[in-house]
Image 1 (cartoon, rainbow, N blue to C red):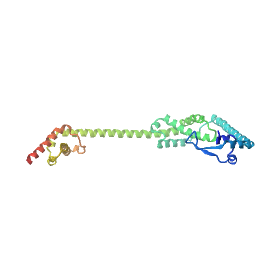
Image 2 (image 1 turned 45 degrees about the horizontal axis):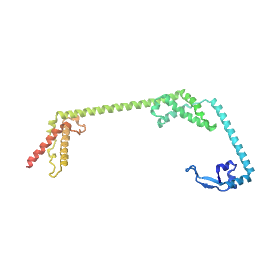
Image 3 (image 1 turned 120 degrees about the horizontal axis):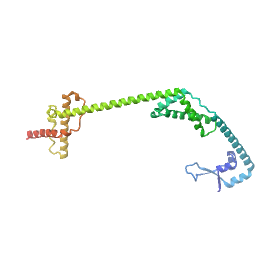
Image 4 (image 1 turned 90 degrees about the vertical axis):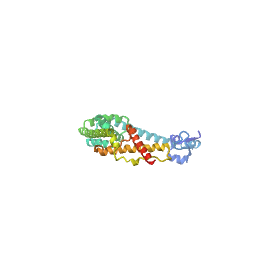
Length: 299
């Protein structure tokens, strides 16, 4: 290896100031191991080894200072860990009931706790305890050292405090009542919509039955204008003739429905029945009769 990287240089005891003073600017190269990583800083091996010999005592002092700082830091961490252990052994949680009720309301309004979860008191308490335990853990970690057991140790006291609070219980109960009212309203709307759909369906069926019973009378009604039923042009293709005939049949069918609505006000607002189905042959015969009569007149 003809070069040393920055990590190796620092392990020799070089401080940033010493690197700048004794080694100068590094050679910048791409990281050969990870293409997406930052470029590597390299110093010539011969230069570094020579400076290490020349500045050996200074480097030893630097390493000693670094070891002392590291030892001091480890002692502080150890002390914090000891304090944390003592704190957790004697830990008790004081619940701010009004803040907890505010959290319940906010969780409901923002959807942080889903409606199905709110319907279960136990599930709601579990999630609330999780949120409050997270906040408590963050507070403890600022003062003491980081420990993975913190959350586990404080979750149960937080949950027990929530379970013991009548205010929190009433707050959750209030939201459950709101959800229950919403569900009843939605159910009532669905029932009304279902009944309205059934009512319209029955009226539509009655309308169809009325047309079936009075078909011949409706077909003879003066509201059906024979002038609308015309022969297609002489040079019209067979496809166009079929389309023309279909339009004539559709006109008669719509006219029959219009007549039925005028004769029976109960069907004034019924929607159009598009499929003439079983009446096709009668309407087809009626249209052909009119067209035949017009052909006879032309002759």
